Amino acid sequence: MLALLALVAADALFQPQVSYRERVASGSGTAVAHAEEQRLAPRTSLSPTLAAAPTRANTPASVNPVSEASVLNSLSATIGSRPADATVAVQPASPANGSGTNVWEGTAAEGAYVRRAPERAGAPIRQLKAGEAIEVMRWVAGEEVEPNNTTWAELSDGTFVFSTLLRRAPLSEPPGRPADAPESGRWIDVNLTEQVATAYDGATAIHMVLISAGRPGWDTPTGTFSIGRRAEKDTMDGSTLIGQGPNGQGATYKIENVKHVQYFTSDGAAIHENTWRQAGTFGIPSSHGCIGMTPADAAFFWTFATHGTPVVIHE
Image 1 (tube, rainbow, N blue to C red):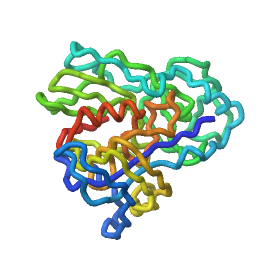
Image 2 (spheres, rainbow, N blue to C red):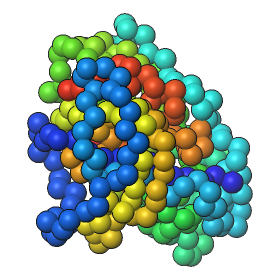
Image 3 (cartoon, rainbow, N blue to C red):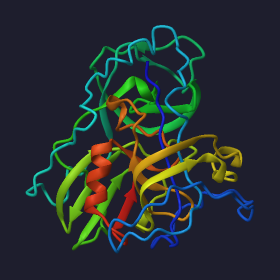
Image 4 (cartoon, one colour):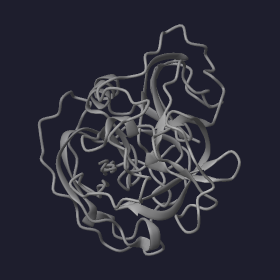
């Protein structure tokens, strides 16, 4: 059965170029313990190893989800999923402004119920058919159906489906670029609504992948940032996040040897690999604010980017 989780990390001695919602509770002056870090020699001269700082991640995959009868019984069959190391191919000739859409499109897994609110109380409205087309307008926090996962999808008609009962549809071209996107050089576009990251060289899309960004309450910040510290391997320690998240309670986890970590905020958000997430559920937000990817996708972005590469994050 699916163990949905997402990983996150931190550190970077820089500030975003565009302001974004402050993620730390009012007690931001509270001291936080630095994460333990496995330090490696920099891969390039532009990949300095700096002091450790707060890291973000999700509960290890060994935690088993709590089942809702006839709802989470078929998650092991990843309807519409791609192989763990697959990516969505993008040709350099893709339209400059992408698809122009800003809605999440996917399909239902077997046993998915539509509900009036993001909770299991009361009878469901109906049961979706496996593979049925779904449009998600936004992601909201609701009942914790499985451990450490409160993410629900709000559909276009105002009803709700639990997040891991959905599968992201592959895209044929990138989402539309923001109006203030860079016009030259390498940069990374992250669309939080569609849960897609695209590597660009100027206006040309080079590579597009499905991601798992921050879930409601642990939202990935929006704005224009740049890659700061990079670590080929790092340890994610939730004890460094006290003062963040719902009610400022932080998170509890410790995950070692997370590869291809590229930090883009000073409070812990990073691009990195996620090895504990089921392949079919990339494309759904579930992290503590980081941008999680399959190992192959994270490796590509590690090679593509370097210290200072712009990261543009938007809805």
